[in-house]
Amino acid sequence: DADVTQTPRNRITKTGKRIMLECSQTKGHDRMYWYRQDPGLGLRLIYYSFDVKDINKGEISDGYSVSRQAQAKFSLSLESAIPNQTALYFCATSDLGTGIGGTQYFGPGTRLTVL
Amino acid sequence: AQSVTQPDIHITVSEGASLELRCNYSYGATPYLFWYVQSPGQGLQLLLKYFSGDTLVQGIKGFEAEFKRSQSSFNLRKPSVHWSDAAEYFCAVGRRSGGGADGLTFGKGTHLIIQP
Image 1 (cartoon, each protein chain N blue to C red):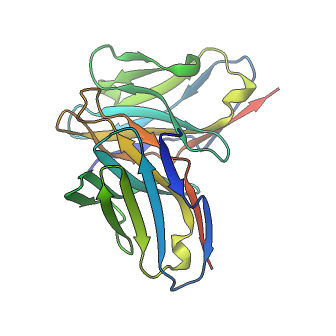
Image 2 (spheres, each protein chain N blue to C red):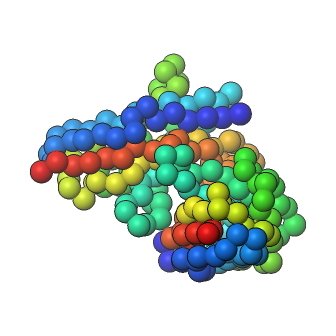
C-alpha cells in the first residue's frame, strides 16, 4: 500500500553498527506499529505507538528502540545490530480512532541483513 | 496473552479445487480476527476481518471466513482457487483496545501451493 512507505527497502550492515529504519504514512492514522518477520515464525510485534506521546513495547522489544517524530513518522532503531536481527521488518498503521475498527495497513517491508 | 495457531505449514491444492486454511486462537474475550495474505516479495494485504455481528465474513478475492466461538476457530475458505492465490496466509488476533484492535498477534503462516 503506497500510503505506508518504508526506507530503506534493503539494507546490509555489520555487527555493532547503528541502524535506523524509517516509516512514513499519509493515511492520517494515529496508531503505528513495527513488526519483524522471520521464516517460520510469522510476524512479531516490536513496538507500537498510539500517538506521538505514547510508545509501547511489544513482545520482542529488546535490542530495539523507536521514535515517533510526528503523527506520520515512526522510526525503528537498532543501536548495535547483531546477526539474529536479520529479518524482514514491517511498519503498519491502524485506523483505530476513526470508527472503522482497527484494521492495520502494512508497508512494503525492509529487508535487513546483519553480517 | 493471546496466541494464534495455524496447524498447516504447507498446503497444496489443485487449481479449481476448494480451499480451507485453519486458524485457532486463544484469547480471553471476544477477539478481533484477521486474515492477511503475503505474495512473494510483497507486504501484507488484508483479506477480511471479524469484529462482531455475522460470524460468516466475506472478504476480497472471493475468500470468506467463519468465526466459531465454541471451537476458537476462524478458518479461511475459498470455493475455487486460482493459480494467483499461491501465497503465504496469516491469521491474526487483535486485543480489543478503545473500540478497535491493538497490536496484532500473528500465526506462523500457511504456505499455499497451487498445482496446475
